[in-house]
Length: 224
Picture 1 (cartoon, helix red, strand yellow):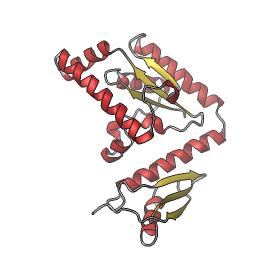
Picture 2 (cartoon, rainbow, N blue to C red):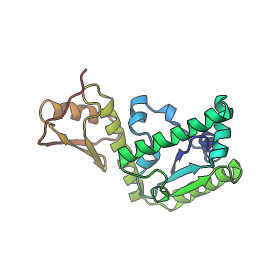
Picture 3 (spheres, one colour):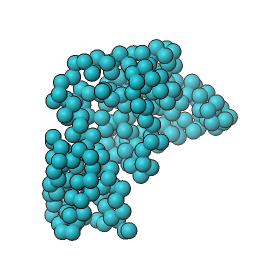
Picture 4 (cartoon, rainbow, N blue to C red):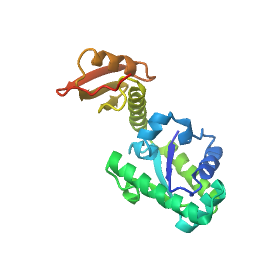
């Protein structure tokens, strides 16, 4: 089942388009509200976490400042001037966050597979386009591509589980996965920290084995 991951300019009707597309495909539809707050804060643009293995689409939704301002004013019951300021502030903050976390320009089309102006055509037409692309992916992608996607998903779940642990938090860890075998790299992962990392990672569904590799520097520990 192909993954369609959307990131939006505020006011580009992502939820409406996402629900329409999911309904056409019979897919489950998830928003950032479905994610743990701490994880959503760190992975602010989930779309950029979708690996380039052919099993999914990175979609960027855009629209004119005028149209988006009207949408935000209507949705949030704001005056036009206030809504425009909110749109500009949101765009600036999100762009800066993505630049900091991923060293990527959120407005660079190279970082996405498809960019859609949600105000140029009816949402129902755009949903049909996305649904057809997803079906084509399902029919053409091979088992090795899906394995890469599963490994990426497992690595992301392990990383999220580690971040949510009160003694680990935002420690600088790198998580990789190949056919269910997870490797976690980070500074100071010596006893007892290596055992803690192992125990947390092993609880994630899909993990077949865990290897913890220590760098030389001590790992900063988040207070309980």
